[in-house]
Image (cartoon, rainbow, N blue to C red):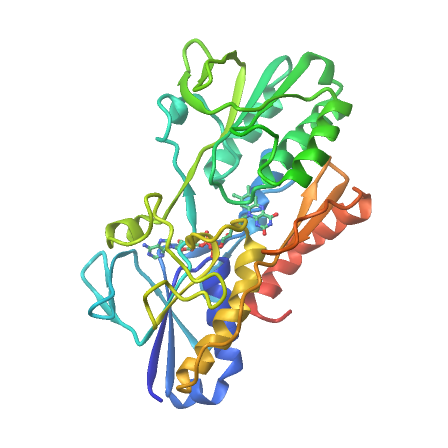
Amino acid sequence: MDKRVVVLGGGVGGTMVANSLARSIPDEVRRGNVKITLLSNEEKHTYQPGFLFMALNEGRLEQFQRKEKTMLHPGVDLVLDNIVKIDRDGKRLIGEKGTVYPYDFLVISTGSFPDFDSVPGLAEGSYNFYTAEGAVKLREALANFRRGRILITIDVPHKCPAAPLEMTLMLDDYFRTRELRDQVDILYTYPIGRVHALQSIADWAQEEFESRDIKYETFFNLTEVNPQLKVATSLEGSEVQYDLLISVPAHKGAQVIRDSGFGDEQGFIPTDRHSLKMLGEDSIFVLGDATNLPISKAGSTAHYQADVVVQNLISELNGLPSTAMYDGKVFCFVESSMNQASYVEFNYTHPPQPAEPSKMLHWFKLAYNEVYWLSARGLL
Ligand SMILES: Cc1cc2nc3c(=O)[nH]c(=O)nc-3n(C[C@H](O)[C@H](O)[C@H](O)COP(=O)(O)OP(=O)(O)OC[C@H]3O[C@@H](n4cnc5c(N)ncnc54)[C@H](O)[C@@H]3O)c2cc1C
């Protein structure tokens, strides 16, 4: 068949697809009939759920990073380059120094990124746990925080819809353990009329908030942050004074998607919800945060989607139709304190129902933080 499969993005989805494809068709890869190239602009592979633990001083960045090269099956060629353009007509990608990467099949898993410039004052005035650098700074700020109000603002869409809830519930416990909770006021805000996009999770979280004196304000769409006065203003007219602001801004798709002239307004790629092909494109698959699908942007989403993309790729490489279907499956552990967790599992048709929090689920989450490295290599 002599085909070139190019995978763009060395995060969860890209790494899993490249490894699983190489493992599934070893003979074709060994004979050079199928050449798998993974393009990434980062030498290190980062396990982003670790940022939550880093911010609360429960982990260090080194624990959550590996060299991408060490993550890959020997049948996958890793090329480090920042891709600046995807030329769909010419079936090629262009790197920042002009290198051209032709493809027969392209898999896009370029992720999503918090837009700290989406609100005036946000970049200077807020802390975050959605970047490695942000988590390190927040760890210091929280360690030194002894009294006052922590305001948490959230905008959509953002990856890992559970993470802001986890941070809020863990912060409550973090300050209780440090015997500072009665001096620390926690105010969580959310842009719609409940505390989470999914009703069942919102009901669960609201009950947790109320039982622990975590304050919340819904219909809070952040429009401005004044870092000097430490005031956050919402579209709805609220002006909230804070001492420390933790923000999860709206996310955008990767720059290369927007610069290549496709993707919706936010840079997410119109994708078929079942086959995971880019709409209108027969040779491009999209997975993970980069899609525009109405499903959580999560590592587990990318994981389940990787199986479908690989099955469909193998069919297409053999001249067969793509019939494997993604059903919208997502699975997430949800930390409910520093030592308890719940979990949710859902798909396009079945809404989530949070499980009763337990210590055992928390230990499963911590175990998965380690198991992830095997899973991304396709060994588990
Ligand atoms: C604090 C936090 C907690 C989280 N917790 C969970 C959790 O508990 N469970 C869960 O399932 N998910 C969680 N997530 C979400 C999860 O990390 C992401 O959804 C997942 O990483 C998405 O995978 P992806 O392959 O789409 O993108 P990513 O893993 O982000 O990978 C994108 C890759 O594309 C590369 N790239 C982008 N543009 C280019 C370019 N132009 N050229 C070359 N390479 C490029 C990047 O370098 C990166 O390697 C969490 C995220 C955060 C921030």
